[in-house]
Length: 128
Image 1: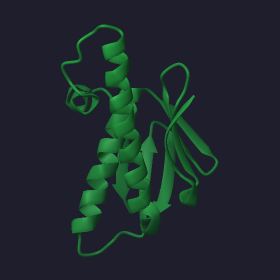
Image 2: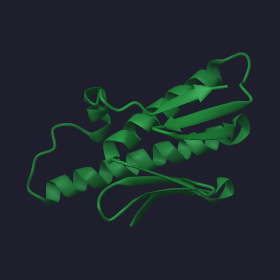
Image 3: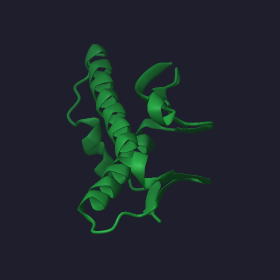
């Protein structure tokens, strides 16, 4: 297990398990997903953050949806949580590029660029 990012203040840990899957643990909820799915979820979290920061009124709650799991987060800590998600994605990108190079393969895209090619995955973030 490799911790990719932590935010103890909000009881959030994002880690990569030994099989390569990503886990988002928020309080007592553990959501496991593939690396690609995590990147899509992070992209949606960052879009929600951008929307919140540019909006005139802030929603009281933000819901993160992944398959049948929904986590509702109050708006106040969402900015810190979104930053933790983005830090985990950046660390994952570096780690995957390092692993790719150590296996004598040439990585032509960063992991973040691969998000655009992942159409079958739909984790969502909703403003409530």
